[in-house]
Length: 74
Image (cartoon, rainbow, N blue to C red; front, side, top):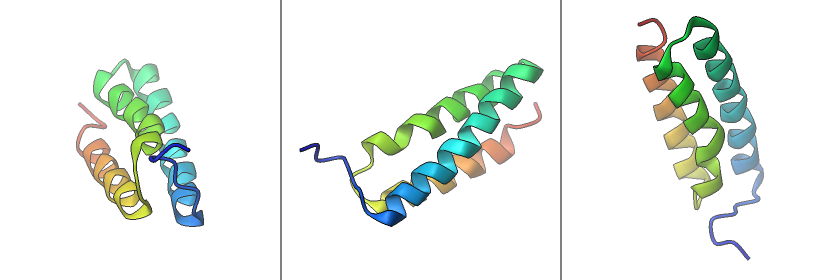
């Protein structure tokens, strides 16, 4: 069994929420040809596969959302 796989409801909810936001950031960045939202969107869609617990999953997701907030309009 994968030690990084966490199947508790909180992790699944965090993955769903942050992957959806990441997909939106990716589409936004590609449309406006901005590399920062594209990179953050890709990171948001993939980071949750490597998080060992739900708390870390939420913290990294919120951190990436804050980072996206600062780099969404350059």
